[in-house]
Image (cartoon, rainbow, N blue to C red):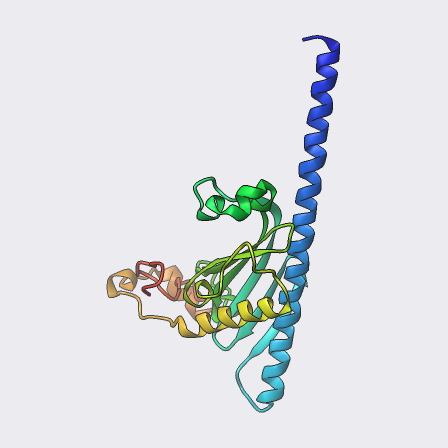
Length: 229
């Protein structure tokens, strides 16, 4: 390969890096702005609850100590919202990749991601590090601020047309309310006897020390199916 060809190839690579890098930065900024809206709405939800039920013994609390995570606790449940630091492209086999919206412009397939996890509040209070939470929803946002929601029951029922739905304050409130509703309706079931019939001496000693090492989850020992739990 001649020096001129190498130079031209280098220019093309530099152009590709600049173009894709700029796109991904724009996508992340849009997703970060959406995450800030979620923070705002979660804080508002906590304030509305306390103003509506000033004498309530139910713990409802919004906390945000990290730039890319925050939590909203309500009673025995807690939701964690996580802003992923990377930008993703939908898999070629994904249904969205077949839509005219993305076929017209492949850059629209690049999205930032916000994940919503549901844990038991006691899992954190008692430091039960073996407890598991559940991913109940993911919000994808592209450079045009269009959003796609992938999630369980209440979240999956949200109007989901990627080519027209723009993420705004109304959408952030709708997603937050749906996530809370799902968590409230997603009850803790008694685990199958065979799953919990044995316990070690160390486990019992730790229980006596209020460390509670026994794994607890809303569907411990049950198959976690899409929308049948």
